[in-house]
Amino acid sequence: MVTTAIRARSRTADTARRRAAGKPSGPDQRAGRATLRNSLHAEWIKIRTMRSTLYVVLGTIAMGAAIATLVGSSAGDEFAAMTAADKLTFDPLALSMRGYMMAQVTIALLGGMVITAEYGSRTVVSTLTAVPHRSRVLAAKALVLCTVAFLTGLVFTFAGFLAGQAALKRAAAPHMTPADPTAWRAVLGGALFLALAGLLGLAVGTLIRSTTATVTTLFTVFLIVPAFGPALPGALSDWTHTYWPPSAGGQIMTGYHDPALLHPWPGLAVMAGCVVIVLTAAFFTFRKRDA
Image (cartoon, rainbow, N blue to C red; front, side):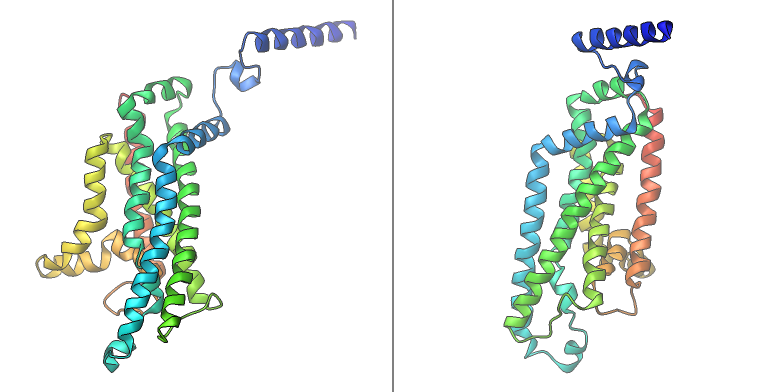
């Protein structure tokens, strides 16, 4: 017992000396290893203190409600003059979610900035020195980014839904309420879609490293290809219209089903599959390439 007491006092004194010297005292830290929890905490601090994060989050939410109000008011005013065929395809749910076209870009750019900002400032070297396990670093970035993007997307879709449906109701046009199950599929599915957009941005940023090239690539993927896809030759145009991942994934926020397009959940699965492939390539590249 005397020996045990002496060892305990020795460990206590050693811990006190390490703390006094500003050195970590936990078993993982003594071994020079940062756990996933340490990495998550570090990545949360980084993304929280990035100036662009607050702008993206607040701007995305405000933009969603504003665009939904404008689109809902305009479509509601035009509804009475529509033909019978147009009224059959009138989709109040898709109208209130129209802002997702810009939101997917802002969230994806945030995902790209999470990694390209570190390459630009060369702080990635310090990060990898503190956490040599590269997969853990990228996994922590992905988990933190996914959480921020999903919560932002959830507020974005819910605010857009309420604002858009209120505008349609004021215009005496067909509208929905939160009690409709389809509404919650669009709200939750839309948040998942935006989280996937953020992860795709992170994966592209990891592969490219350059902020400018990442921004250009993401604009091309999310806006330019869907906009100019119909101008492509025959079968390529049809494929782009139906299976291009952002276009297919966006079907999760629609109420009317176009027979030429995928159903909501299969469409989101196409987007998820694309993200898994690109993110896997990003993990492999991040592990093998020099910082």
